[in-house]
Length: 570
Image (tube, rainbow, N blue to C red; front, top):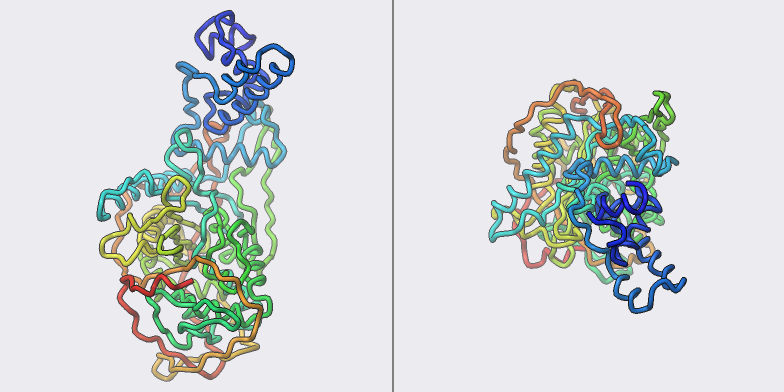
């Protein structure tokens, strides 16, 4: 619409002479920048429009064009826009993709005028079949969980985020942030929430860098760190005895990771640095203390998928991105995504982390992922604050695809997930719905892909502490845990991480058939298009031979039901 009369007819279905003060101020705001302040552009643009509208009213008051009473009456809210059509390009889950494309282009220096009306053709990294599978899976599970739960929870309050990243490039292959951007513009795929035990992978990086190996032995029992008053416990207060770092990763043993972090000089800082190096940027909740590995730190699914992709990519970190390239109206390429990554983690350290994370799938808390029928590395995560499960995760990868699945509940994503747990589960574990969702989605995403091996790890020999080696029977025997090195006392946090014992059950069969090789067509941002890179998959790796003497034995595991003292864990 051009001019006040045309705008009055377009937005308020009346002539300019009949506009109210509120309507006139709103049009003055809109006409300043129609692309930025279009009221049909979704919640974000309405919020921007409100700010501009109030600025116009403030100016009118200052100029004496309206009285203080008129200003105060009109100022709090925008006028109603009758019959303003919703911009359906932002409707549904596709709206989140469009906004991600627009946001990324703005970050790369494109103006809003260029993005909205510059005749650009934007080719994304999205894979059509993977994106469709992510949306289908994420939208099925809230209803499924609500129907299976005791009571009658609202499926609309259960939020599922799925993000897949091409491990070789950082290109986002699929992103599901919510069912409808127009109804709720919060993108759960880019919203950081407590990463829980998925953060232990970064502690493993830090430990390997600091002279430990996957066969280094740590304290698997309840203990109180030196100089601290808060006891560290495992889920169900289970006592594992001395355990290797590999075993601690597979079974998500809280005490072992706190013990290891405490033994390192500035251990918490080293864990945070490892997370940053992998691709998880520091956000709120990153309390830098010896409990950092337990995952109070908040990370978004996009960043978590990209961080785990670094392990699959031999320690080379790429920038997660959704735009592959941009062409102008003449078809000339004016932007191409950065193609080169940065070696932020030693190649063999990354390979050893992957080796530990494959143990999660083969024998630990993530065994359900073996249903994918191909080698997988990954980690479960379940975050508990004072008895409320506030986030649950599974982050896993093949050699080519890294996928993060996060579950949260409530408007702000910090309410208790326990309401949605299955009756047979001790709590809403990361190994239940998050891992089930991951398997159902990845079954479709990897269909038809060739298998590609993970990097074979070279054994890292421990330079400190005690290590373990296999016994003649193949089952390790007990070895004492090393005494922790005194460090600065950690600051207690109210967050604990819980993990279940794995109870694999079949997941639902996917119903859609993906194409083996998705196609791409350059279009404007209204319909993000796809140009995936070729992807493959891995085969299992042999466990490297442990390097020293002492051995440890796995005790029996408890039944996965909550115990009264389980809420005393960090």
